[in-house]
Image (cartoon, rainbow, N blue to C red; front, side):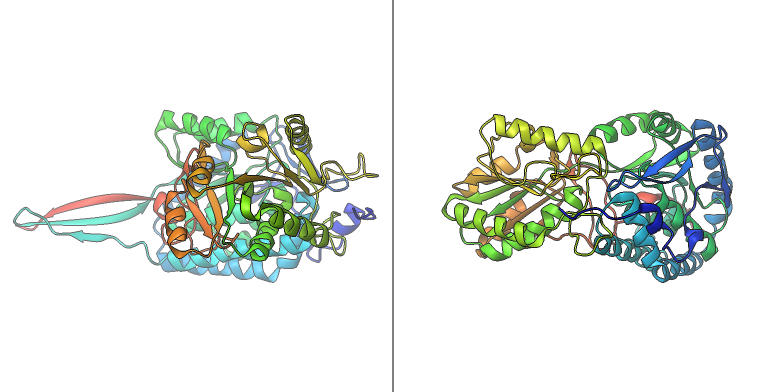
Length: 502
């Protein structure tokens, strides 16, 4: 564990363009306070220093944002795909020009190492680039009609105002992936970023304004955890909102989906995962271990697609555990995200830290053995939400660590003896976002990829996400796809025009 010698406020002052540090919400092209004048503090999870605040808005503020988006939609929906493409491109260029400031700001409110934050900014920018190109490709169809003298045309039109609710683990990319698609399709948006990480989101609004995106097209409301239910209820039930896009837990997704059903809104839900990571007996052990290191511990394990259950064939189990543990010891260095050499930062929230600690205790009580880590780093009590990268063996299939999404730096490794067995265990959960496996057998690659009940599969890789790839899950991991050529579909209505030419 690196000693923390970072002053969060000093680091905040190093951001070159201080106007990117926005402390007001963004509605109808203006920076505004909450009607209540209340604020919510923003804390660096590595030092627990308060680095700023944002308006603590409520349902009354959300109604104003929705009204602004509704008014803007009246004209925005008539812009051409080329016009929207050009504006998105200008936004992209400004994001890239300010990537270093955006990354530093993200590390200070989110905790992830600076290199990871820089990677996220570029990853997020790739979606703005992708949808700036897709904006010109909202193609329709001409359908051959069985009726003489009739012509059937199919056109696509934007659904309207979109409510976008995003999480704290990727405060930049989860916004760009959704907003890029919505704006490209001709929709306007009201965004509610996570209360832990609003600064990254608000900085994107500042850059969007500089890019010339018209007032009311992008709106952002910030709020505290206390006001989140009321804000969410307004976004999901207000009849002027025609679609809800949410990334977060399955439990909250079900709640929002139920609320949205009262007005039959379109929904996109990218929800929780519990990804299996399978190492077969014919796998490249060193490659699998290296990919697991990144797939498990990126963002301190706080990603919805990170490996959660690691299944290793009995014939190579000890070899793999040894190789992987050695890599964890060699490569992972816990510390503040802005400290030199840090490769893993803190948990973002205390509730997340407490959950990880409890899961370890319950697993050990059921017979698991901690091979590495397993506790908060010594000497930093009260100085951040840190937890050591942890490897466990002999973990039971019925403990929370196995059955639930951990969302932390815990790596339980299980034995298996046959392909049929491991597929059954991998699929024995209610969610299905991502899954990974390693094997040199080509026939097995196809069998296992098709058998895993997930929306995305990494075969001989721990990486699955990029702008051209459809992102989303099956089962209780949600509905809809983000990114790719399918990404605009959920933001467009299909309309039939049946024309008589007689």
